[in-house]
Structures are given as C-alpha cells and as structure tokens.
Image 1 (cartoon, rainbow, N blue to C red):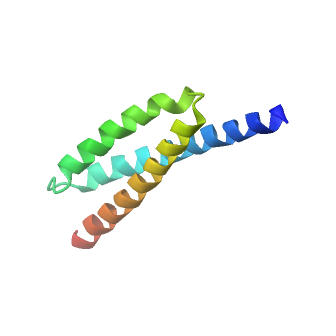
Image 2: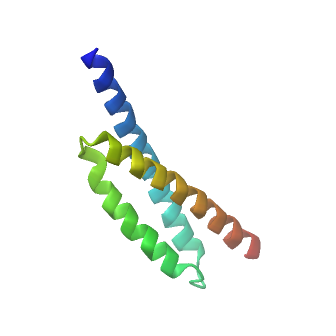
Length: 90
C-alpha cells in the first residue's frame, strides 16, 4: 500500500498548487478592482499569507499542507465576497 499513500500526497500537493494559483489570480483581480483601496490592508495581509503558503508547494508535511489548503479555501471565499462587493458598488 505504499503507492496509495504516495498517491494521496501527490493529490494534496496538486490541490494546494491548484488552489494557490486560483487564489493568487483572484487576489490580483481584487487588487485591480479596489481602486479606492477600501480593502488594501486586508489584501496586503492575504498577499503575505499567500507568499508564505507558496513555500509549501514542495513540502512533505501532509498535515501542514492540509491546513494550508483549508486556509486557501477560506481566503478564496473571502476574496469572492470582496469581489462581489467591489463589483456591486462599481
């Protein structure tokens, strides 16, 4: 069964990379639409967190990767809410 554990790790790493890419793109778009800088501090914090998470793409610690995947999901959810607000008020 060692192959199965390895496959699970690959899947989690792929999920982390996919979520990181999507979140990074969404964060870029939020920065672009936030012309009045209403969310600038929050965007800056998210950007710092995203850079920290980027370093985990090559980690072997599955528990840490799973935690960061959850953080990325939460971040994406918040960014979608912010984007909705920015587009609604535009």
